[in-house]
Length: 65
Image (cartoon, rainbow, N blue to C red; front, side, top):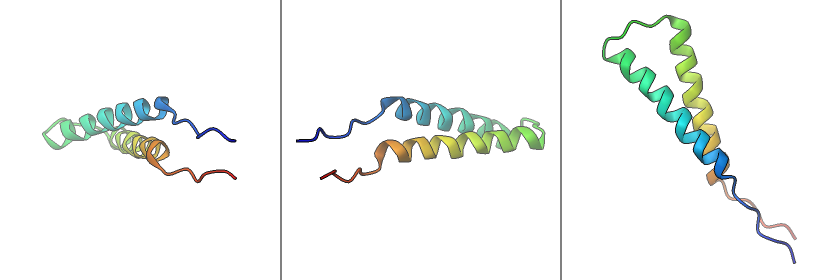
């Protein structure tokens, strides 16, 4: 008997936090805040990291035999 793999809720929290922070930065940029190109790239990086963490949390794990 093997136990079902446990989901890491740390990935869920990180994903939501990264998406929220990156989204907030892009939203303020779109609404008129002046950012350097580097800060915009960092905001996009946070969004990508957040999406990847959420993917890791929600992907289906195949059952081990």
